Image (cartoon, rainbow, N blue to C red; front, top):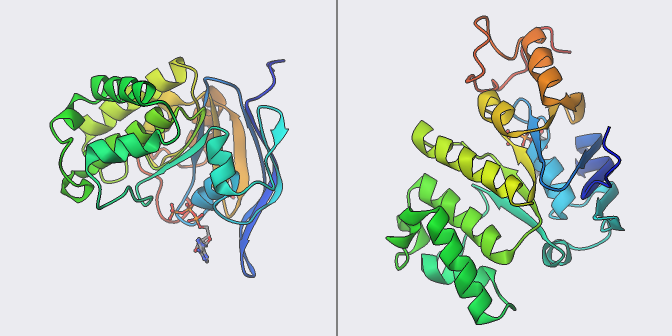
Length: 254
Ligand code: ATP
């Protein structure tokens, strides 16, 4: 185990919607520049876990960011402290152009700094450069994901909570986004990635949690995760890691 203090430390996180428990006591820690992957069947509580970490839903337990307990902070304060949530379901500003959406993400920063960060986003995603003046609803799914990630880069977030990297995207775009995630981690961003495609997760994550019914059925290093997923029927008979986690848990996994 590393002696480094984790940048993100979550202990006994619980999220409920009324009487329905969605996350039932989850722990995780992520070091700077690492990717923590979360996988599991539909309804397992993955989005609720990210939302609880980001402060978008009420949660109990503790969330520490770089040693500071942010558990009682509202989402916008966690955002200002460097946490950012990226989700297909999380809307960008529909009435603003791509350029404006990027610029707004750098709100409060000096204009030169924002321009420089936007240039870096365009170097990472040249496709966005051609789309700078169009409204986001005209973008393809892949371009929208690029814009969401671009906004995170402009904001300078240290911790990226990423819900579903590959959902609905062509394999070519997914491969490009996987490279971007690896580059972001290399550049020192700390990432919690919820992802249904095990192959994507195993490529980018150092640590993996398999969530089932609001709890960690498995949590550990990626190599052990691959073996666990295989043993518990998540990989399919041929051990194909491209497989998407099915809506229901596979047989014998609990
Ligand atoms: P998916 O892969 O389908 O997004 P998930 O693993 O992200 O699933 P969550 O979306 O966190 O799971 O949902 C966990 C449980 O909480 C599910 O039973 C879901 O129906 C319920 N739930 C999620 N959001 C709400 C909400 N806003 N109100 C009530 N129940 C909710």
